[in-house]
Image 1: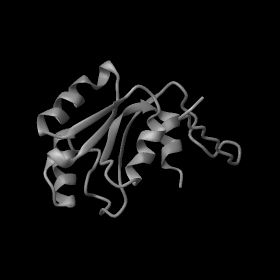
Image 2 (image 1 turned 120 degrees about the vertical axis):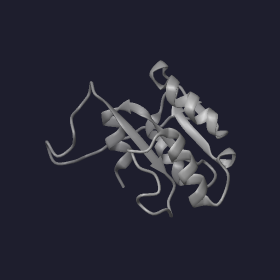
Image 3 (image 1 turned 60 degrees about the vertical axis):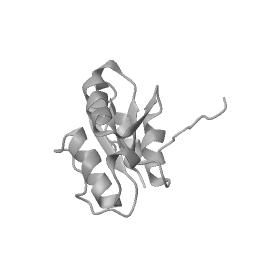
Amino acid sequence: MPITLTVIVMDPLGSMLHAPDVYMDKLAIGPGYDADVVTMDMSPTERVEALATAKGCTPSDITVCILERPRHGPMIAAVRATGAAIRLITDGDVAGAMHCSEPGTGIDMGEGGAPEGVLALLP
């Protein structure tokens, strides 16, 4: 299948989080920022504004990648109100987090599967 990402992780038995039916909040931004530029305690609006300040741009220069799910409706509305662009994806939240490391992709926020969140954090 074109444009497919496969992720395989090998680890000692029992060393990775096993949470197949759990959602988790996830937040990723590109490299080069202080660890506390955006935090999980911030609202989506505060995250976009903080990242724009750190980048020296306006919120309208930020692109937010969000998994397109009904549960994300309030987050999508809040991000749109900042003027930031939104890239809705139907699946692939691991790839969404990985794309934050590419120039010009902005920020990834959302809620998705816990196993995918763990995979997105692996170096």
